[in-house]
Length: 105
Image 1 (cartoon, rainbow, N blue to C red):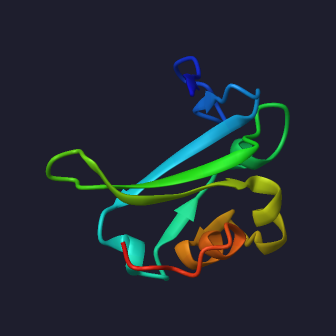
Image 2 (cartoon, rainbow, N blue to C red):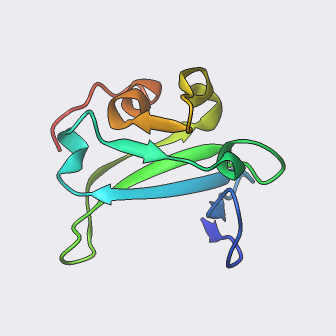
């Protein structure tokens, strides 16, 4: 991924195929909590600067290491039918869009 410019709204980087990627991190351990939520801004899902895909990574907040398997990239278009009032999705909803049933990591 090529990182987006500093203060870029809507996405964090561009993939080699030109797709815009939004990356979200959650605390490692929350990967098994289906109620854990991921929030995106309106800029992240609408307009010219909207991301095409979402990637969720799980981070050990003590060491800063990425642990376990990430979720995604998941097409934002897959999440849109599940959009709620504040553009909030649960880890379970994102896994379902990714065809992942929530395996233990």
